[in-house]
Length: 134
Image 1 (cartoon, rainbow, N blue to C red):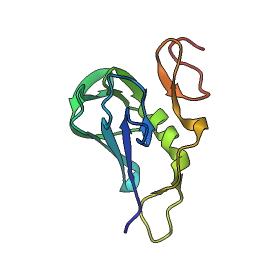
Image 2 (cartoon, one colour):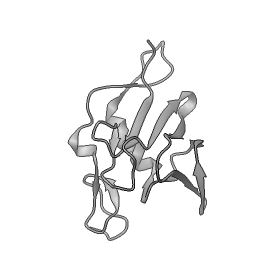
Image 3 (tube, rainbow, N blue to C red):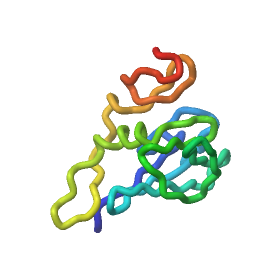
């Protein structure tokens, strides 16, 4: 069995990246970490679709290579890929020398879970809100 490199995103509490919003499907999308530091995002037949926001344009996606500087919309919720990657980073460990991808470990610590600001913006716990500054 090879290293795990897939992370689920959705409203269900069992998702690796849970997003508590009714516009987000229980299992909305899946992020796969590829060799060479690439990221592959797949919409999991969500009700409200997944959109890639890059260079000021928005594109509905079913499967797409995404970059750390991109933003992604799940239903009504827009998240920066850098924030998503920060949220999963604690679940990664250095890959063994004979493996080419990181492996996932244990549950996500509370300190890196995504939270909703009073203004409605979703962001990593403990980060300053980019929308309202709170």
